[in-house]
Length: 500
Length: 99
Ligand SMILES: [Zn+2]
Image (tube, rainbow over all chains, first blue to last red; front, side):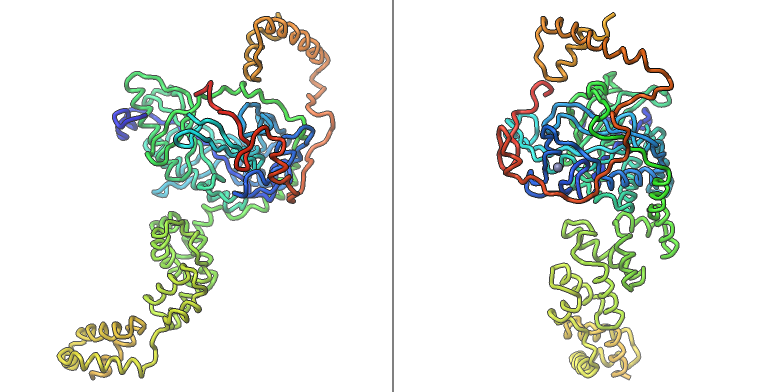
């Protein structure tokens, strides 16, 4: 267990060491079927219900490559500015571990389908940092293990394990960066920004659900330190189990402070796999890293090579959507946003939601104010992501329209939104069911105003004497009497009219 | 100079989870050496104008449509399992040597 005393203060770390980063991201494609068989590719599901002789590795069963998965791999490669291999093969990565019934994982070894690319990443202050991509290759996901009998569900101390192979064979793309030098004190931020940019890119390509919480996007962070300006490459560790963007940043930062403390005392960094512990924000040692030849990779004899023609690659290039960075630039201009406003939208993951709300008829100002403030609060209160709130952009646009028509005040509109979030139906239904219509009948309002003036004659006199500011007290009384369902502006007009 | 050493055979045996005795190591190392020498005869023929072959058939780009086909179902899937629990394959303790 690492205690605080074993960590170096972060400022001291960056004063004495240069960090070197390397990031490996695994992304599950959301194809309909698995990589090499026709089993459904679905998250969840009863255990071992999406398996067949191929993904169970029954003797004699033969794999066939999912064409859509190859297309997705090429599109990802193109979006990452990679070269696309003219000819490449799958390879067997041999290991004994029950998460693959075959005792090997079908992957790509020295012939990845895409290589030599880059991704430009925007940091918090708007600076662009270029991350070079080493390769993106195709492989398959493994099954899921449940370790029984250990204290914490961990593999250590477990009595036995239970295997569900629904995920075994799900198409996976592994995207590996080249070593990323020169990040200095911003290494944790660069790591987070890279994964965030990659996630946005994959989302725009519509090739994956990119849900880090569900494991469809996973990040392993390689970190090493070398003494400042020494140019000597340090021993690296690989931290796994990093399941959120925030964790990517925390894991890199923690490893830097842990390694620095060891190096400062003359110790050596062990080259190993480490696991990130979400609760404590620390990493703990896992298994020692096996060397590459231990996997005894060899070309997969059951699958024929893939040779994407240049015509096919160019056709796929034409299917690439507007890239997130360009889209942001365009939206910033179209909606006249400041840097800070754009950053709020990005951080809230609200761009798509706001754009769809604008599409449905709201202005960008109206749409932004709903999503980034009130709905964001609701998402936080309910402990879900903004996009997971049970309200659609169309429904938000409808609420905005009702406010603009004068049918709802802002206060009532918020109540309508709560009703929608609580599953009470469409905005109009909530208005009806909760009786939230604005009291716009002047007769009823005038009556309420007269009553309020009669109740506070001294205030009424002040208004009559020209002290218009005093009208606020009467407006407040009327709003109270109408349970907030009156349009305050109209009430104010009536109060002044009555007193003149 | 043998094309495979006794140490390499021992290493491979460990990776393949095969319990091989010292006597067997001597025996297999010799036999594997003969096999490798025979296969390496191919290298004598290969020249720059003969591309390496990894497949017997000259095919590329054999793809399947992304269409779901029926799976086996849980009962059938687990029917051949030595042990099962809660709809899952039950396997013995995984960590031992590396813990
Ligand atoms: Zn299958």
